Amino acid sequence: MTAPSPDVATAALADATSPRPVSMSAPNRRTMRWLSNGVLIGVGLLFALPLVWLITASLDAKPSLAIAVPDVITFDNFRAIFDPKLTFKPLWNSVLLSGGTAILTVILAALAAYPLSRYRMRVTRPFLYAILFGTCLPITAMMVPVYSLFVQIKLIDSLPGTTLFMTASSLPIAIWMLKNFMDSVPIELEEAAWVDGASSMRTLSRIVLPLMRPGIAVVFIFVFIQAWGNFFVPFVLLLSPSKQPAAVSIFNFFGSNGSIAYGQLAAYSIVYSLPVLALYVLVQRGLGGSSALAGAVKG
Image (cartoon, rainbow, N blue to C red; front, side, top):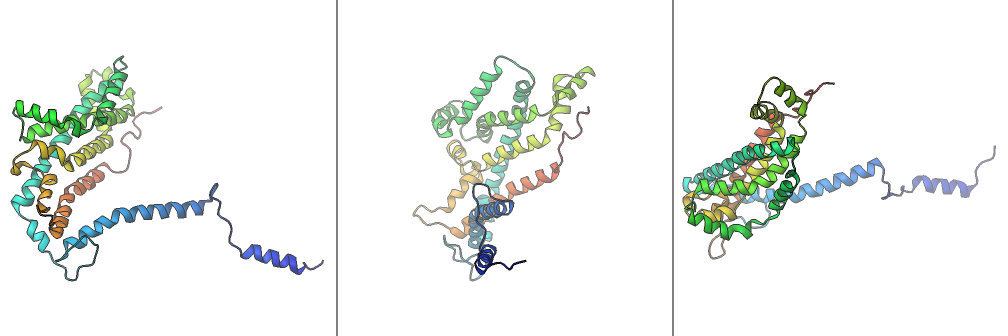
């Protein structure tokens, strides 16, 4: 047996110590994991930076737009916003407006999605396309005629009237979403109920809707968040400051001369976000992680 030449040994050692090339066309599993983790960390930092500013600015006695650790931690900004007229009344108006919009939207969208999901009609596809077109209409393009209409029918500066309009504007996307969730419910369950003498409304309320709880929760949260953060519609249709929601009253922290109360704005933004986070946590815990359709149909 002959020993390898020095040149061959040197080449083998160089191959062993040199880093392996990374192929982007067919990356291995470790490379993909590093890439995906890096992208997720970058996206997470982009979302976390505004939240870090909210926390630091709300606890700082002299906050600014820059993210900085407060020299002295103070809760004066939170004490300043804990005022019934400034915070609690607008938050209550937001709960009424967003909650009423979400409840009405889910009820009406479920009633509209049921025949679209269960019956094959000639008008089904054109109706769905018309609904899809309705989701593309910008809300700013229709506010002038809506404002004129609300003045004529005396619904201007009315919380119920504003709730009805926001429900109508949320219905198209809600119908689309609920129809897709409703299509996943096996129709064999309804046929069994029909054999036992149940009506269509009873089948919808006792069988279909309970099995669609995750989908209903998704639509409810989606509509609630959209209404909660809506600034333009309440700003146009609600004239009295006592009826405006928190999304509009947050405008009070921007002074007329360009001065902004950064600390109170950050504290108010944190309090303003808490109801949505609480709703998300409650709904997620109530639904759990299992599918409502698990074991619904056998065979």
